Length: 124
Image (cartoon, rainbow, N blue to C red; front, side, top):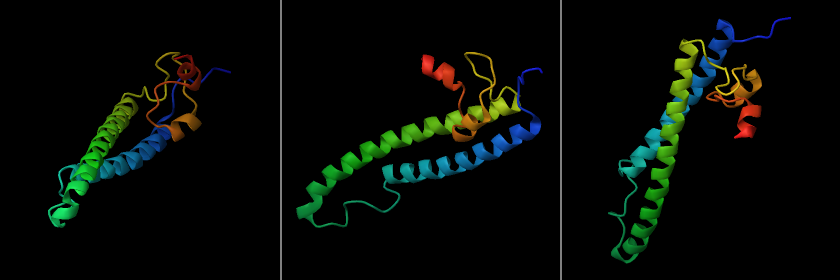
């Protein structure tokens, strides 16, 4: 029996649906983080008394730094998901970039933007 070398169109559509769900959630999260960074979400120190303002500004700075890191990470995740959609269009989705073999569907369901099989990932 021949070894399967790529996923069928029906399987690719299943993966596309998974990716689109994750992409929508990731974009919502990113937008929320972006709003918190620009103070568009209404959480600011301008409405507090001067006594607590210094403490709140310090906490706000730490919070913004963390939100900035999270936003960068979320954007990277979004880019990986978008790249996975391109691979689906090109019908190269699910092929390990190291071994050239098909990545198991279970792994792609868990990590839909994966480009490496577990074996290749472990070798890194």
